[in-house]
Length: 426
Image (cartoon, rainbow, N blue to C red; front, side, top):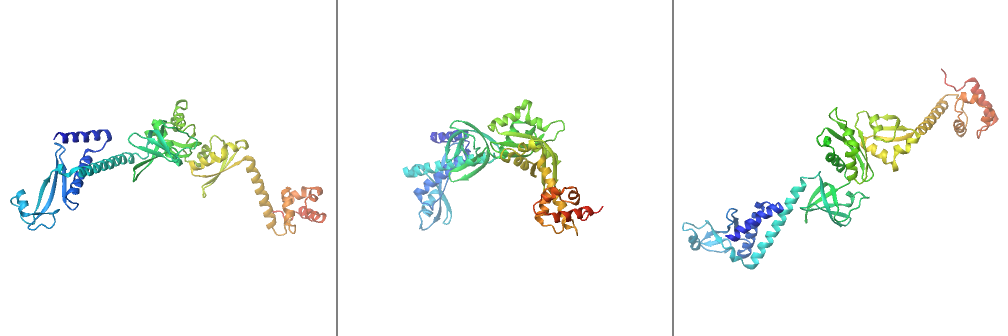
């Protein structure tokens, strides 16, 4: 009895220290006892075990069918022997007889021990899986335990987690014993037990950090409507307030930048732009290109594309290093963004005008350039001589300087330009 009470005390201790449910432990013991008994009495024997959680008493019973002639010792019992257990039993009935666990011997006891250990391990794995699978999407703290094939192994206390190479920020370095904060990305069940997968690159890691640092975000007053991130480099978040008295950008920045700086520090210096989320796409995209200043935008609603014009000196700032700024702005807003400087836009505008004028003159019957080789008309256009007015104003020296243009052709152009031939009518 004392030994059984000690067993129950061990159960309680395991439940406290490892969080394994006592009922699971009792089931493990009962299953182990059944396995051990079947080693002695045969695998086909009908045996069950019961552990009383109040007294600690272990009971093992064997069920057999009463028969006049025993053909299978494992499943049958003679009527004479059965009536020693129950005087009223009849052939065809089932009787139960209690088994003394001490009869199992060393081999059976070893088998019971192995089954108990396995069941305990399974119960512990199940406990770990249930605990962490319900925490996917949370941020967790751990300690770097070691490294394996590029992965960082993180000690979470009750289990170990893995931070795979693709979920690591390339410029971050850790050594054994370092504290680390990460996002629980997934929990998988495999042959070795539950595997907790962590991430420091996931976009939700950034959002959850703001959730931790900004009470207004945690309470739902300020919402992070969209976010874009290039881990280790730069991030952008668009925020909106559901309370007119709360400035969403100010709430995320904090007094003297304290809140956003806390996030930046955790991300090891990753730059973060915080902008207000707006319904007006032009203003939203312009803000998303911060710190660059936008001059004007041209919107193509059907293709959800936007041409953004900036001052010449702002072009590199708007595009960002290796295109990072415009790339993040496009992902943040959902618009396809093309950046152009003022001078580029003007050059393209002038080129379009020349092309339009040339096309108009070429399509008009009896146009001023009828019969003139295409290469010559292109050279004239490049020289700014694309219509009758410009031809009339040009000197002979200007016209004769055009490759392929001789005196007779110049005279012909002069005549056409002088009569207004080929010039659109008012």
